[in-house]
Length: 361
Image (cartoon, rainbow, N blue to C red; front, top):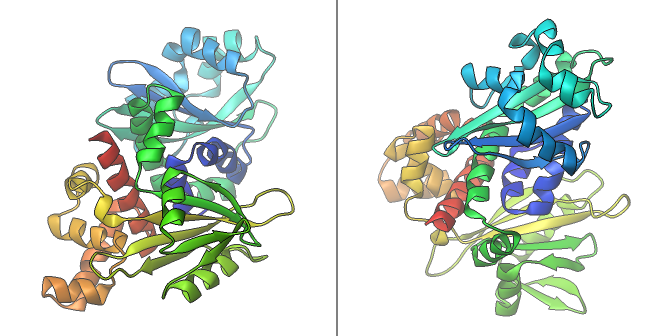
């Protein structure tokens, strides 16, 4: 799983609903839940893969969450953005004597006994993704744990950001209004470019006819970036799909950024999600957020913002009056603090922070 897929799920309820299951499958997990403990002590499930019934989740929150040995041990030995095998924190003997196991899991006919977790934190609290297996199953494989460990920094941060977003939403209707008010335009198309879905910002983009047009239900591409977008769509919907990040030049403003992400429509149909962002619409306090959340210096935050705006190393060096090597070093240091390995990952993190900051304001 690529980090962009994790961050792009933040503002798409349907994509986020599938995220726990996708992460569980990496490690061969049976169930997966995302939970959060706010600073006021309130607990909330942010998502799950559907293994447990909603009534079971409500029962857990009401009667057992406060005594969950895995949660308590993770909070007291808190490590954000890393993969934890809970067997290292809670022995089998201790867990087998817990109320959680004997009065909750066994009561509903379940044998959940093993767990991996990836935690995240923010000024609003702490939480984690937990992936489970049954008592009769062997422990999680080394290969599965390694695969999850590689993306753990992104999962932990996504959990924290999703919790912050959830706190802003008092209802499903408000969540929809928030998405419609967002500067992030989202379109979903199939391999034949048939438009399947567009949010409010996406509809506005289509009506402007500056980048896409719709004719007979299909997306058409206009402008100087048409060839690059066509190539990106072809790659995203090919038998070996791959994402693309494209900068859309504008005469009097910073470039738009277009993420083209592979998205299976069903078992036999390939498609893509097109996410168009206007970097100038990001909150002006995004650099401060980057510094506060990840410890970026002002220079590192500036180059990270530049990448999110679609600027190249050369462009940033010219604007800042420094060498290309200086910008490269700042990008490398920013990537290390953000837990990223590629420039596209840095851009995805910054855009998620920028939109969230604007919505929070």
